[in-house]
Length: 277
Image (cartoon, rainbow, N blue to C red; front, side, top):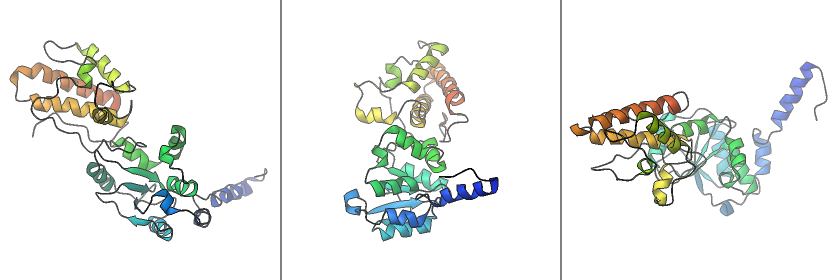
């Protein structure tokens, strides 16, 4: 307990609290984790990147002492532990691209230590617990911004899939009333439908689970990226169809509206282009 002291001693007391934090002090961390059962956790190897609160090399040595083999990021990475700084944007983007449609479990160093100590996976814990672990963490925020709907474990980011030939007649957007072109809805009605799609809590059960998963959570970067990629794909597939010029114009206007309304200043994933190169 810190008693009222002069300002100089208050700093000393605050510093002492930081030193006794087991998520920042390697002596206390090692003491907490000395009796963990690695096999019960199902952890044989993980990839690591970045430093803070522990230096990356020191954290790797800590894992090795526990019998967990640390690796650099690679295409088959399934478990990733991240620090707060000294990580590569290009490496993380490449990992999301390689794991698109596959599972990836991402922990901060602090989350992973909590996992080791409690044998309870933070990613399966209550949403408020996970949110507090991730709050203000620059690496986790970056991953979310470029299309990984963390703390989910299925990567939907890493680039949208192109439509080939004619796209499905009824997708989610069309299902809820989105239509363009000569016989389509006016601009304000299309805006209302796009807002509904962005905020929808879940897709109808009539869509396959794999398709519903592509849309991520409501009001997330994954949801917005899916909407933008679909509309941009519609444009690209219709580019060589002169009779669809009005529809293309509507899609381009709507895509620009989505960017201004939901993307600018919030996310950093690559915004899709409607141009066919």
